[in-house]
Image (tube, rainbow, N blue to C red; front, side, top):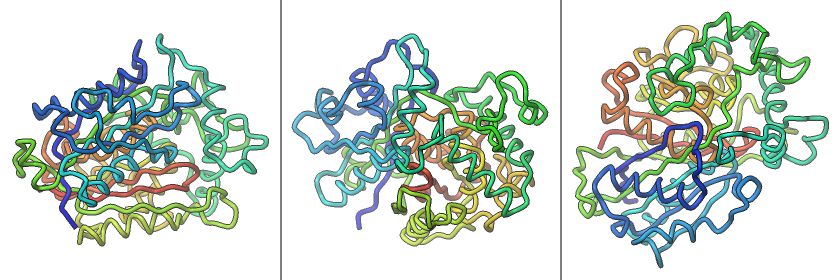
Length: 400
């Protein structure tokens, strides 16, 4: 197979895209990525765009056609992908596959989500309903907010099986909020969170579902945002004028999908996620011991623990302890979610998987903000999920 490199990464600040409609968001993502390397969009051969809530929140389809409106991209192979919260990661894989097929040597993967109105306001009940469409219909009854409810049940199962207290998950949130304060792109970068605040039920912090342990600070954010990666073969790097020494190699990738229903499968040991991660490691010729940078899909804090286990940094049930021991900090054994993670950086659904890979590329090239920069970064892993631990997209990156 051809080696695939990240030539450029660009993202918006996560939070609110005030007054921006979908066509402008897509254009800003592509032109931003091109601007990072002083390239024109005409130098891109293929493209893919990922988003999850276009029809339901933005009343917009045929996103590929909006990408083609950008000067230089018309009449080229472009597609839109949707894989719930793994839509961004799927867009990256889509471009990789096009390059592997020989459809070109350069391509752009775009991910975005517009979840608020033009004034930055959100309709929480509508968003909860819309996101619920990504669950199995038999598992929605009796759940006002479907996904917080589902992951509250997963959190309760994790606590019961492994004897983990609520405070362990709260500490993960505290660590991620601390990282976000040094990330200028993070939605919550002006918020300081203490363990006492994360545990105390008052103000905005409450139990999301009565009788279940998930609290407000355990949850990711409702977020607008966009992100884009320019990918290239070795020939493509030359075409773009990017030195190989300035690029990052996507050395391995994997994708796997479990049944949408959680019935008859073990979500605490997600088979599809493990298979996708193992495939990425095998393709890269690396092991978890080689990884000291990672971005995990912590839509809820329990997923930071489970994700730490999926990438092989902790055994099942030991994910929270890895964080409690300080091993996930930027100066720890493996800097995990140094961006702030979805909990504090924000979760613009379609942009999430793209931004996770891009942030790891920044880490590997020494471009992360100084307080968050992992010392001597060797290799990185990303784990992007969609649905109730259903769709998994994993990558392994290393300096070119």
